[in-house]
Amino acid sequence: MGMISEFKEFVSRGNVVDLAVGVVIGAAFGKIVTALVDGIVMPSIGALTGGASVSDWKHVIRPAHLDAAGKEIAEVAIKYGLFIQTIIDFLLIAFVIFLFLKAYNRVRTPAAAPAVAEDVLLLREIRDSLKSRQP
Image (cartoon, rainbow, N blue to C red; front, side, top):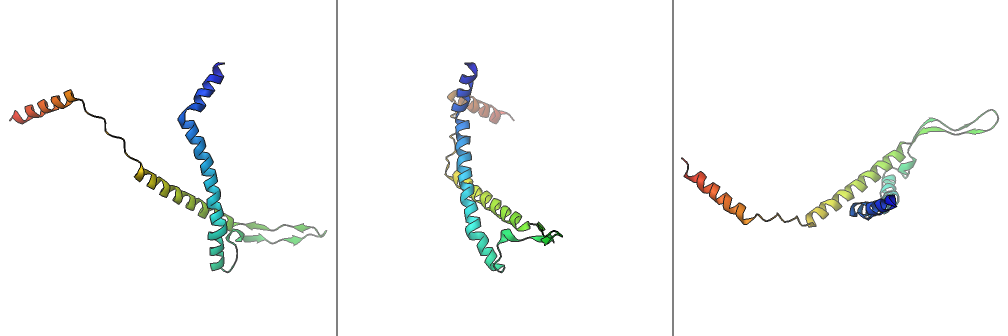
């Protein structure tokens, strides 16, 4: 029974629940940004570069061909367009998260400084008074 109660305590902590919510929201947000990149950004870049989809950009090392038996052998290519699209996707996600955190930090109210006890204030006044009397 000890392990179950420890697990309940672990799960009920605010940090674990907050982390779980953050992961779920982050996954959903990643899908939104991926849809933005795939549906709007990349077709726009493709239109500027002659109509080819960026994810289809590649450097063919060996083209597809038929062997002696008539069986097709697939091409060997470096697909750098997909890599570029993934980098753009990551940069957009990172930028939007940066903007969100910047706005969150601006809205968040800073914690109030703890009040200084009255006896500490009195001791500081005495200290400052003694310092001003010394030559």
